[in-house]
Length: 319
Length: 295
Picture 1: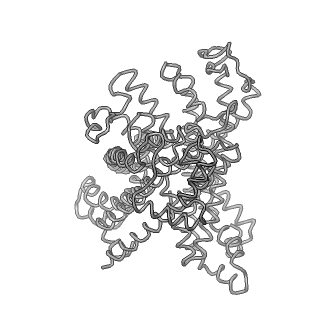
Picture 2: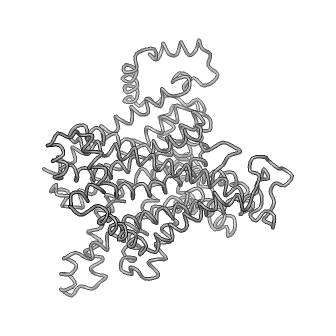
Picture 3: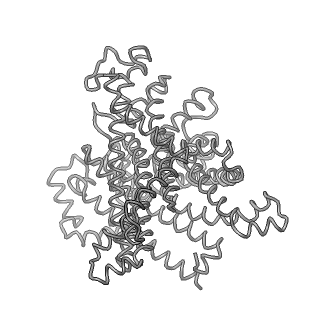
């Protein structure tokens, strides 16, 4: 019962947040040079065309009324028409979003599979040379701009030793992304590097904290081995906080997709957005901002739901 | 800090001296943090004093001496417009460091005020203010920055303002949590009971007692901002030529890097990494000194 209430409250929060996001995007739409009419009709439109468009679209009405109209369009799935692709923005996003989701999920899975054992291992070897070495590498991975890291990876692995291609798989369908799995290696590594750094650091300190708890001493007194305690007790206890952290990390992953997709020419939302910025395709830009933000809110919400499933303390409302 | 000291009844100068000495000793014991501090000082010297030791012309193009490999006269070679790359590293570093520092501090100030007011007010004011923060976090900063770059090209101060406005959200959450734990302390309640206003409670008690959280948040914020400045130049929103920064040097050197001219991208790339690492290390050290949770 408490769980249902908590989830309902969390869902309501997410709806409120999405509502605020639509207000922000609406404000951006109205801060475009020449207003939304100029943004939608393009730079070549004449003043007469602009005035006619404003009348037809209700853009001469008060802002609040316009916002209600805008919300209505959103609810019908109408995000406008791209003037470089001559396609509806919704259609473009439906094609591209799954590819970005595949890439970010791959990055997250690879990062966690590396970071969780790495952090625990560091905690077990704390303050020894190897711990310092990994900590230093983590700092560097976190501090390197993704485009610089990706560039170095391309020069080393694609140009010098020709192991992986520097361009991600193209094609319109989702299946084409997997047609050439080796082409996914560099984009996934570039996007995952900083995340490995963040989560291994987090896992290291979380493990250290848990190792000081009473239950570890009890288990040790009961004769459990060091590795057994790490895997059976500490891992399970740290996992909940890692999942919570994952919720905070979703925006970073989506933000990073912009740079990774542009660098490797991966045909997802990030590349769509990048190209739209180069051609000032405002309907696409604002549609992408809106959808990527909604995706972020949903991703964060899913992480929270997952946390309530695996952590009984959250269910009881004590954490 | 003064509020704590007043309430303990220990003379401020005595408590301050031992506290400060203890804090410095704890910071110096963290070797990584000390290395970070040294790296930051070296980079400040490099960027601001370096041009007097190695004077170069960074304003005029000199196509006759463009695209040179490293040599005695140009230790890091020259770029496509003939600028000496070592001198450019200093020149661009000034912009990266100044914009990063200013934007990081601005973000901390906005976040601190927002978080303190939200946490102190509580109730629906808090709820509304924190949902705004959630919404801000949901919109990836790089996406907003690219939309802005499509609309206009800001001036240097405009750039600092934009960077500050997209990155105050995390500190606001930290300061809000701190305020929640401080607002019901006796000294705040006492101030309220003797007729002190809410503003006074925030500026006299809540903020001074959050100073350690704020300082740690600011250090990490500066690290993030320097990284963000590099991204922003890569996205085409950075300072305009002939001015540049490390991110601008990186994106200008991209094509050259593919043809093996490493000296155009490795130095600015490593400079960004080193400085951001250094600020993060200092932040880690300060967090240990102040024993602050979060991040």
